Image (cartoon, rainbow over all chains, first blue to last red; front, side):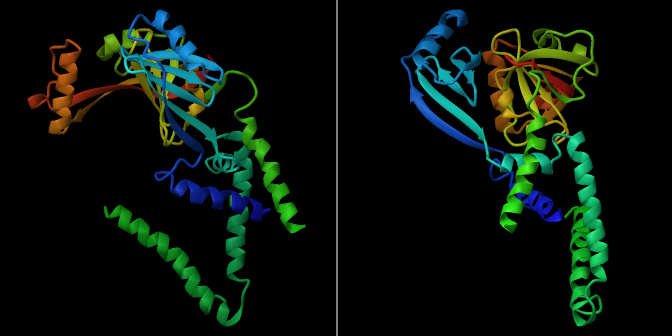
Length: 169
Length: 162
């Protein structure tokens, strides 16, 4: 049981640790296209013209006049930012990363109730494995030797880090 | 055989993740909404100080979502070009990009925060106020190098589709 769940938390942990470098949940795309400029007329008048000229393949969810010169068109899986004066269009798209999105969803417990119980049981099993594991290996590779050094490292690393954080480092 | 077992175990977890987003068309985030009346976003933005500290409910089309952590959503006002930001605690509520273009009703406390601007930011803000025909500084700090940021500190939201 712990193998599968550890992979869930391990793989998504790596992905989420680097969330500031990349979007761990969505694959983002950006494309530029052009339409004939529509001009900055009243929104009810220009919107159907923009939609006709864009001829987007996706179902249109909504539109918004973000600024006098900008109309945003929201579609399934993305949006089009239309410059009404120049006709320049930026299409920003997003799509869930296969598997990774699901793993991150579980790791962050975004679904709350159903997953909380499973995650709690998993945490309990991990604690049990850690504690019983201390006494599993005997001799020079056990607690009195290499095992003890590695275990001390496991305690020291987070302890030192916590002290550094608290001291404002 | 072992690989197949592992794959099956991982696959069996996927429906748990999917079930939280599928189902009924209305999606509830956080505590949802319970305030009795909806306030117009244009009214809140026109008189922001009058709402500070109050629990309010607003409705608008989602026109922006935090890309990194889904920790805020921008709602379009009933007045063209205006939008209001709903900020939630990181990780507590996560707004996915799929809600863009959909109608969101959000609830929370209207807050104001004064932030200090760097000289170049202050210059830009002054230009922005002038361009909008305003004649008041963004706030009363010395030298006008500060800006008051209003936002809804959200506790819950309901996304009801387009």
